[in-house]
Amino acid sequence: MLSPSLNTERLILRRYRESDIDVIYEIITDERLTQYIKFPSLTKGEELECIRKWINEADISKYERWVIERKEDGVIVGTISVNIVVKKHNYCNVGYTIRFDYWGNGYATEALREVSDYLLENRGYYLIECSCNELNIQSSKVLLKAGFLKDGYIANRRLNKDGSYSGVEYYSKRRKANIN
Image (cartoon, rainbow, N blue to C red; front, side, top):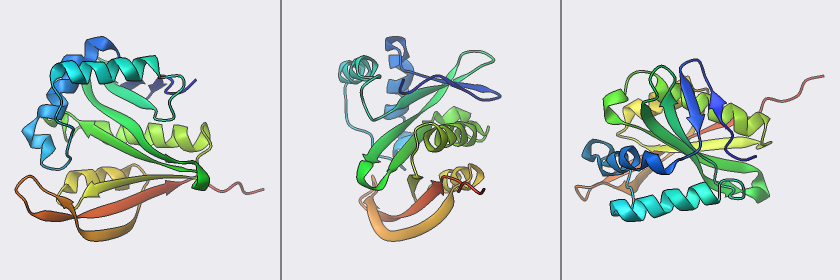
């Protein structure tokens, strides 16, 4: 089963539901988040269609997706997903978004650690990669805390909302070698 429910100390990572639409739409339209990542310009109806497609294809799509929900109260604090799969080289790219009002609570680190470990150990990927805008210092810290290593940097790679360009930092986490 792809995108199985995963649990951490404080979080449940679960598949999308149609009832998640309001929170997901809030995330992709939050100006405080879109300064670092460009979401597609979708109407709420179009976003709901995407969620329905993800729900229907959850067992066959190579792009695994989870909603990040707090155990204590069921509040959705973000999303995390496999965005790119490179089968030939046995790696994937993971992206995550945490609702702005929940930044600084360690939720991104906790979710990323759980998902990356699942992908390496259970799905058999050799490597998980992530990237972030150089201006997003919080995301850089999350990646390091989740066990990723900074692999590189490319200057002037991402177009910002104001028309300027920012560099992109690249991080990866590898499967631990089996030592006999």
